[in-house]
Image (cartoon, rainbow, N blue to C red; front, side, top):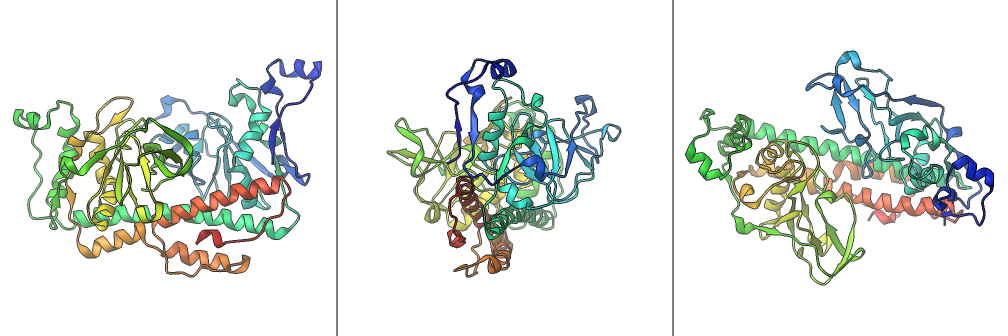
Length: 485
């Protein structure tokens, strides 16, 4: 197993060079596999980012500035949102020709984080904390190591503790990538990495399709009433029990009108439908067979992106339900509070969520799935933002959620939406090999909903973690795809 080890002794020259007596600054990352190549020898091109300054930020533009927040641990593709991608003045834009197939690596705040550029991005520049690199050979194999703690720990061992990563320059290029003896293992790792990429991309496409279908369905199926905006009056203020402007905003009222004016009708949930969470007094995190759910575990697309476990006496998830994150420090307008997912008890088993989440249960499975889909859609993201409370930490209360109307989506549209989110593929995946897996995997990707694709990504990531460790230790690896069943 690859380890960070401390030397038994150090020289005066090493102390002089590092200017430190702290033991952590002499740690060395040991790779057992001698067949290893420095990253600098695998890279043929490096592009540097550049800061533009906050005075270049504007509300809308056709040019954007990527910050290190766009490179996130749980994603192998860029995470583009209002925090990570900033519209800037075209005159401040630095064109570095970000192209499909390039890899972005953070050398700054989120040290060693990596993402893959899936398509050309001519209108995006990158900050000084990001490097764009090109790897001409065995790119996806190398990416499996770059997206693993194996890579991050190496970088940490090369940097003096306490220093700022922006001072590290291109130290990440000194990291080593080990290689197996057999080319088919390289191909195996590459295929798994590409499967992860394609499934993550498809999740985003299906999430966008859900949003498009919902918006078109609502807008194209309105009663003949016309929306008329009215300023707040005393009666409305008393009913809302609040004076802040969010719930009196014209956009908020327009969305509420569109939902309530939908020809299929709408409904609201009473307070008794929402259950709170808690952190068990007696618990062990990181172990056991019960799932531990917090708001940070819920992806924007409506699935669990961290497979965290807990040992505790009691659980509050014991049946199908919708889990709603009720607080977050992300964003400035509350647009990320209320993000939800459908918890499939038959697949996941028991679990426990903390006080940062609410859950809805005791409704038909299809209704629970639709509530999760609606809560993550563009219209409902805006509604949650408007009704949220707080400044740095945005929060949503149960009594505010009871005021949100949910549309009674038509049966044929409901099926399309549910399939996009939770469909299981009707594809045989038994006994696949290097030649048959890719073709079969493409069918699985096409025929699967978001929840299945996300689960496959988790399984692939766990498998790659084990493979990376085995290769670095020069251990034998069996080519096997049955773990995806």
